[in-house]
Image 1 (cartoon, helix red, strand yellow):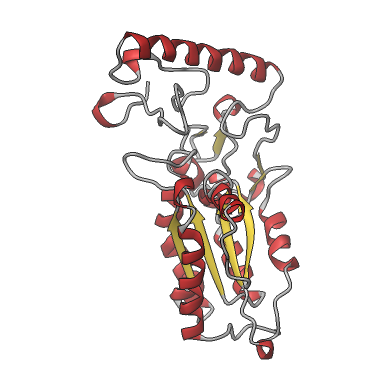
Image 2 (image 1 turned 60 degrees about the vertical axis):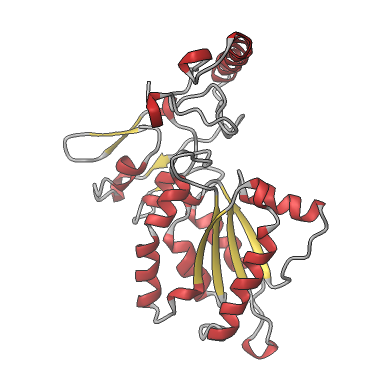
Length: 287
């Protein structure tokens, strides 16, 4: 059973109670963490309910967690695959093996539909029926970008659906003000963000791009284990894209956010707008 710090199973106490990285394997009691008798009994009930849910949902061919009920699977256009191995190396759940040439081999029963493989692939050969590079690119282009002379900047925020988007909902529920120049597009995970989306946004005239995902680290919060962390490690690819377009690196920022930190969100938007004001409008506007 995969383990993290101190040898305990990697079941986060908020996001993954009783769960491990292997769908259908659940940890309870002192296997999961030090517990007394009452806590062990509660753990046993919780793990049993998770197991029942797993059997019921897999019998219908849908995802168990964290995208419960999802019926989509990644589709690989292997004719365009360059065997770069990025998808097999970055998948958090060991879904992809390789043949002798390095071509990915898909193991469907382990997949949690996070889209990390979609974000990793430089050739864009990975797609889901309801989530693909071209779909999000179309959403980016569909947003109205004001003309340079309107003096109305436009910021794109790609936010993960597990922590960042719920945090945005809480901002609304608490009637907090957010910057009117920001437009939000939800993504499955920050790890599913393909660098093409950033270059598409800059080319479309957006003045800046915010990438906001779950907290990561030893006490991880990311629902997909390391999706948020992968987005940060791919920052060099984003910087290279901006360099090719002769754009400032400061026009793209990455942030970690827990649901409980929702009050930080308006501050993140406002501070980023200050940066954009300093660098001025995107020169690609109107092109």
